[in-house]
Image (cartoon, rainbow, N blue to C red; front, side, top):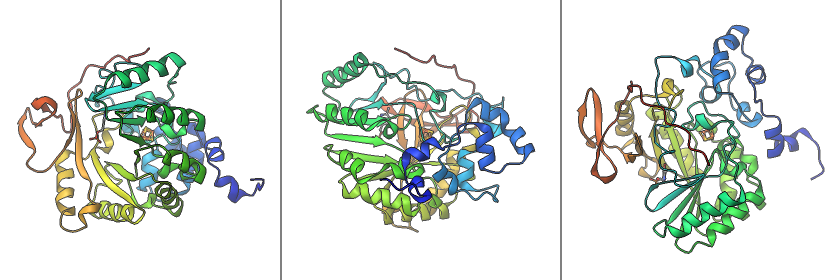
Amino acid sequence: MVDNGAQNEFADWRWQLARAPRDWPSLAAALRLSPSEIERRQGAAERYPPLATPYYLSLADLDDPDDPIRRQILPDPAEIAPAWTAAADPLGEQDNSPVFGLVHRYPDRALILLNARCAVHCRHCLRKRNWGRELAWSQPRFERALRYLREHQEIREVILSGGDPLLSEDATISRWLRALAGLPRVSSLRIGSRLPVVLPQRFTDEFCAMLGESPGAWLATHFNHPRELTGEAGAACRRLLRAGVPLVNQSVLLKGVNDRAEVLRELGLGLLRIGVKPYYLFHGDPVAGTRHFRTGIRRGLEIMAELRGTVSGLAIPAFAIDLPDGGGKLALTPDSCVGSEGGAPCFKGLGGRVYRYADDDPEPRRQKPEAGG
Ligand SMILES: *Cc1c(COP(=O)(O)O)cnc(C)c1O
Ligand code: SF4
């Protein structure tokens, strides 16, 4: 296209990335923060650098300090509060990584970290420890990961994750898709991407067609608030569906963003309207730098009880926690708790083992070394 009008620039995903404020002064300016606010949030911004696309920024109400979009991108002093001593990698992803870039925790599913880049740095991110890290997929690493998938015949689904896997170049994505399509035992492919929410411009007809050619490809996205359900986001989802890519949504329950039944009800109904099935609502993992977003499991269960019976079951996600130390995901209902220890509820996880889940104030956990190579 040769039109250089502002409208066309805004609709161009590469322009969105090139213009995304990616340091504190530029984000603070875009959000029109006062000097005292800039100062107050400086430390958190230095520890976890901010990033947001102009599109996502345009959804924020700059006059509302409680704005749900703003909350998701604005560094908060609580992120670096010393009282919070959660682990950087509480899910033990590093421990479950047999070869570079691959996490194998459930026998039948393997997760591949395609890159460590995102279009927006969500303040509640459970992989914020990886921001700015390079995932260098050399040819030998690529081959080693494929060999692992080939040799582990029990793997039926591959999940492409990141960062955001769809920020990779088309050629890189296409190479992975073709390689995975060549694995006869792998019957489905799940692409975990927040781009429908923060960079819907990425989903051109051509790009969607490429994803849709992949047999068994699903896209799992990450809408947290009904305000994110814009015309652009809806159009991106429609193009994906038309190309043959079914869509599900994984939200995170976030204090001050979506921790009310009416917000989640509206989100669920809005997702159904654009053809996206609400799949999971995660309770915030005890990840370093995210404490201020956690609501506690009890609050989550209350909200679930309010949703049940007041809205279509199709609009209701499963409320789930990720058990610590690789214990797996667990969907919670009021009766799933199998006891408590030291004030923390306990749940039965993978292999029938009982996991203690530090709900609000986890004890200091050892920091796990970052696995490399
Ligand atoms: C979440 C996750 C999965 C997928 O779990 P589902 O319940 O199938 O959505 C697979 N592997 C890892 C490592 C995960 O964290
Ligand atoms: S898009 Fe996903 S991986 Fe990236 S910062 Fe947001 S939550 Fe984290």
